[in-house]
Amino acid sequence: MKRSMSLGTPRSRRHSRAFAAIVVGSLFFVACGSDGGSSSTETPSTEAPAVTDAPVVTDAPSGEDGPPTGPEMLVGMVNTEGNPNGLDFPDIRRFAEASFEYMNAHGGFGGRPVKLETCVAGGTPETSQACAQELVGKGVELILLGLDLFPDFATYEAAGVPVIGVLPILPPDFTANALFLTGGNATTTAVMAVIAQDRYQAKTVGIIHADNAGANSTAAGVEAALDKAGITWKAVKGGDNETDAGYLGLMQAANADDPDILISLYADAGCIGTIRGYATAGITKPVLTTSICSDSDVISQVGDDANGWVFVGGTIERDTPEKALLQTIVAPYIKNEATGEMGIEPADVKTGALGLGGLGTVLVLSLRNFAAEMVAGGTEMTGQNLYDFLESADGLFLYGGITPVKCGLATPSYPSICSYVFEATEYKDGAVVSVDDGKLWDSTPLLP
Image (cartoon, rainbow, N blue to C red; front, side):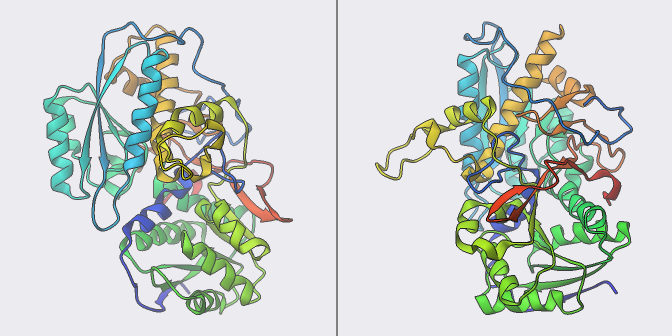
């Protein structure tokens, strides 16, 4: 029987936590990873990407080491910041700005220097519309979306300005006239169902999540994917923040009917609470959750209580040229806690601790590599040409070379999404390790 029940009352509407749960599986810190052991092919257009080991590209193609010499390119970026309800993601913009600053000294954007015009949306349709009108009015030839809840696609389309984002948030994004490098909620939740079905042959699942708009939306995605797989589920809802006893009660309620596995959609402090509740309840069956719960700050507190937990979207630590470049780019923009000044040594950058700000680097550096490949093939660098190239090219990968990119594989339901697969990690023998030797889990079979 599929049903949902609520335990407790939401104690706060911390929307940033809801969005963290949505983002998690899409934050492919590809070759970057985190201190806790997580971070983050050519295929026909009608088939899912091959789930195989992908080649690791190092940096942008050679010949892009010096300052760019082409005509300046005006690029606009919209990002949500300053909303009192917790929708405040300035690091996405700051790290994107840092990436363009690096590019302007090292080959530019397909050989062109970039002037980046940013506009801060406030988490409302009105502010997103105002940003669209402002940037179009300035004559930008490409729009980048950090986190924008209500992109004004109509204004961009009317002006003929292509839109490339890093993360679709709400359902209208999935069918918009835009391209998103990651799949967001839809693909993350589908992969959870794929792992439940393929790795654990689960027939029944217990789900726990907070009772707020973002978490309910994420849970709905999981439930739809489980329905498609023919897996029976029961969902138990709790508060945004619970006591230890509250988390224990949630775990016990979700496990009451002895499901084959559990799924937890809590994040941050909720990770610690649910993992401890799981251990206290003496539950030993597998739990699927998001890669947020594999953060070093969580693992350092829960330790072996995390045995049995699988982190969807997590990747193991990989020391690669991509990781080193990312550390170099963002290091000047991270506060030194010892001195109080901005700037730390690149080696001290904890890539897994970049949070949502890492989306800014993934977006810009992925597009930098795509642009370099496009120009190397003889196509002029323009915003529209880059969009067209991304929409049609084969053999692309997100920055780091692990996650394949192929836009529109799930057309017509999700034509704007460009990546569909995830790695996963698990806590095992005192460490967070790769699940099944870095296997990539394909979301397309169970996308609702």
